[in-house]
Image 1 (cartoon, helix red, strand yellow):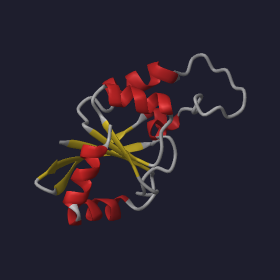
Image 2 (image 1 turned 45 degrees about the vertical axis):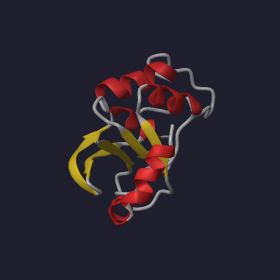
Image 3 (image 1 turned 45 degrees about the horizontal axis):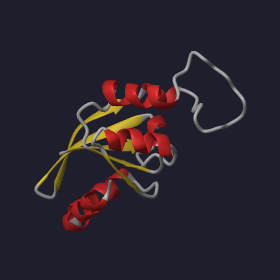
Image 4 (image 1 turned 90 degrees about the horizontal axis):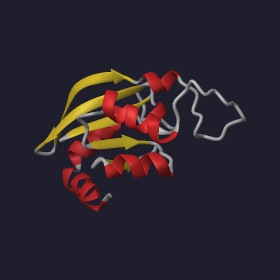
Length: 133
């Protein structure tokens, strides 16, 4: 199973909407162990979050809504089964789960601490995956 962790440049779980995380760390999860496969830069990490409702900016040349989530799924996270993140909006949650991706949310802890916790508690992690949408 492939897991993407929405990551800040400082190496913590990205605190905001996962689609705007600048980096996704991609892990392979097997037999209770995580192996880092790669880090993927997210071009949406540099784009304004037009879905957040901040201000009244109408930049029609930027993607938002379903088009943005579809683009992220197809171009950045096409092979991912699970996303671990600090947050999401309802629309992104609905889109990704309709694509078969499980989303789990956590506090913005250091990614290394999170991966260590998962490896030390694989049953708890796998139970959370089973219970998620």
